[in-house]
Image (cartoon, rainbow, N blue to C red):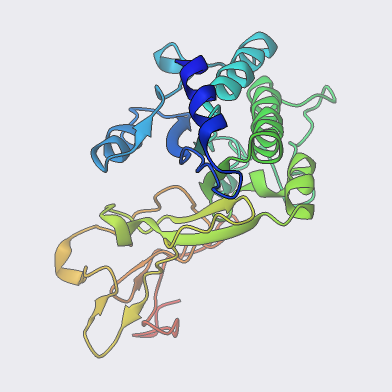
Length: 273
């Protein structure tokens, strides 16, 4: 077949360009959890790779050997195709929701890499999370610069993940945020979310949910009659402005904050403090 193709190319006039085979798009997700994105993308007609999550036998980003294998597989998958990769590293130690108690707080704005314990060391779960975050940042940047992949990294908008030094090279290379509220896409809670996207890749997902006084409902369609969703629940970012139809959870970003009843514009109603 190759010889036949070469023969045909020789017969073509030099002025006639030989069209290149269009590069297809293939999607891959890491830290996939139940892997709901992959079948959704496949249903949309795109090629997909097997979703990866250590809990289901996928790549372990804390393992150097697994990371080498991931790079090899991505290099192979990118031959003749364009990769679209999505990373959603665990946010459990990076969430500002942990700041509601000194017993669970493990990071701060001045110590995003983790607060040191009495022994001068960081908790094991924090150290592992840092390694996974570093591996994610490095693999994401390599995938974009070396393979030309479209890449997005997901975490809560207020996550300490974005403050880690390992993400500075991405910001310096022009990576930017797309910010959204999860309730705008069917979630039960608001959960302000950020996608850090590679240059040239800015998915049109920046839908934000706001209170609409004229309609007496939120942009996502929920009202006070919908029960405890989506804005009374914290979702994944306990420090966010969480409210349901004028009822503000009032947890704030510090300890000991008292619940208050606020109007849509944030002003206190009924004299509650």
